[in-house]
Length: 186
Image (cartoon, rainbow, N blue to C red):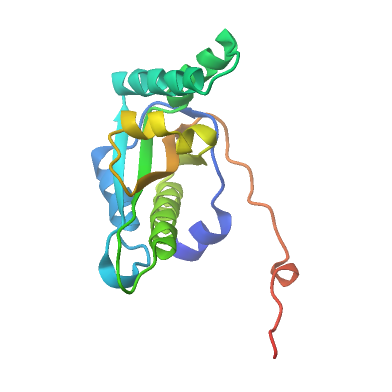
């Protein structure tokens, strides 16, 4: 697939089935992630792969986080949290590793981790792999961070759900770029 085709036509695939990406496909996904723009060559990211039984374990961590938020929690909310990682055969957790640096602010490092996540999505699309980027309040929950083994200065940027699209992908919407671009002058 041509690079511009992937850039202009990538869409999310929210309904995913087995099989998960192969080892060879994963190598391409992570190689693409490592090409994200990276001021200072800090590589301010890492990736956790969650599949098989580990998806149930992640679901339990998410349910515990919901329970720990306080207030009344319904069984439906707990069940929904437990089922989240089961929506795809592979979940890649993109983790930003924010470091003190004299020249590269943490905000730039976070953007780099986001670019790495986007590169995985683009590489997935180019290989015919379905992908969807999910976050939500549990992505920023301290219990989830602890359960994932995140260290100080680390945070979840994305839960990338990857697998075989259950349905045909929709066409990418056509958006007029002129609505978002304006010449600047002082």
